[in-house]
Image 1: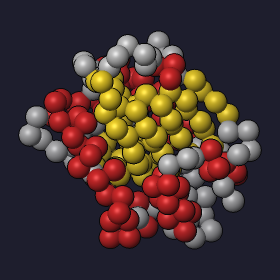
Image 2 (image 1 turned 60 degrees about the horizontal axis):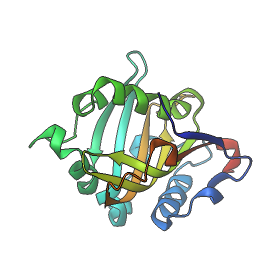
Image 3 (image 1 turned 120 degrees about the vertical axis):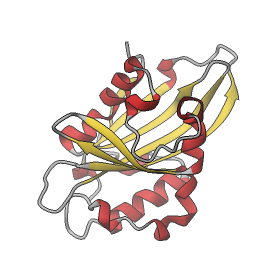
Length: 186
């Protein structure tokens, strides 16, 4: 069961975002659209976003199988999942390679607005819960599509967060998930 709060953006678009790095990446993504609803993965140049690389990930979406496959994950992202990956990189990994089936299903549901409608997904609150600590912060998922595709074929994501001890005061309902339609970002 997903206890997160699913919220409409109610016309507020990117003004919902409070974390400066997320806003900066959103502005970069907007600049790469070139009159299209969303940029392609090829439009994203890591050299343009060096300031964000530890927090960034590029994920392909394989529509036929419903599989999310990581192409790139920054060092901060890799560190969160290192316990599940061991010495392996996230490059080429699917959600099911480092999350158990229930958690992978949960992430897929949370990301579904991006791949089914092309929405930008913005999350704020409890990002990840490990055995003795929690990760809180903000996450932004921006859709990417190959030329000629109307639905996303992947995403550019960024997560800015910090670990905190688990004092029992955080629960899954401390996560707000906003779906921002592309029509709200101009």
